[in-house]
Length: 335
Ligand SMILES: [Zn+2]
Ligand SMILES: [Zn+2]
Image 1 (spheres, rainbow, N blue to C red):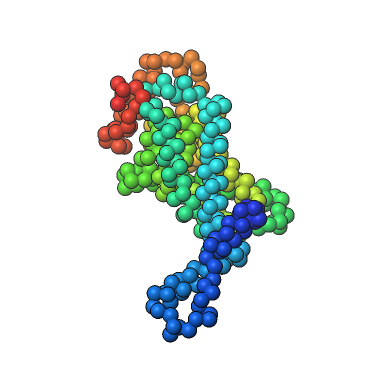
Image 2: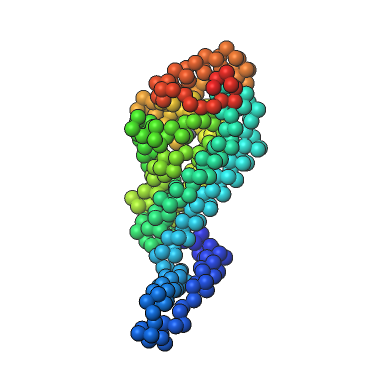
């Protein structure tokens, strides 16, 4: 994160904070004016200007804790929003089958707009909770390291596998916990509004839901050494992966990888496939469900009788998990 911060300091924050400091000039009256000659109101105003000026001046120091925290919040928020928006747009406009999704009886009215609204309004909250992790890493409290050779190249490669397994294991249990009735309604139900996900569903969740499922990524470098450049690549990749598992492109019927088809089954049938990257923990903990065959078969996909049967099963699961269904579907018959 120090790399991003340095670039942002050079091109944005130095000049931005400089302008803020200029907007709060030190009071010229206070050093020369006798306290006794000032009335109380003037003294309060001068003190306030002087305090604001001191706080603002601290923002000229790149190593100031508060400046670093504020800058990292903006970086996390803006980069997170940009990476979500750009990758979801690429998936949505270049290969997501919009026609097919919209024809599904469980696609919501104005779903993409609703998803965008939920995501964009929750990403600032996620950034508020996330930037302290980057700040702690920046100030040297983690095991993040600079030189790729420091722990050897074998460990560098191994740390990728360890990162994925560590986070997949924790995300499995956090996600499964979010399906507990205590947390499902207040936190996770918002993400399950999308029975038929689109790439814009990927970050359309309650900010505490999204934050809790991203916690393992931030915890990892506080438990294990991780090269800081590799960390940035991994963090960017896992964010993109979140879009990929919502993009409706069912390339992989892989037994090991938890792809878009597995996650589509999670949105459709709720209590299966909690994993993020692999099917391992779902298999070990008896929550694995093989994706429906028609996801990989264009002919079967056209079978309306089969679709009706799947929708019936989904409605049965929804009734168990949520009770009543308050969604507004495109197809009014299903509203
Ligand atoms: Zn879920
Ligand atoms: Zn999802």
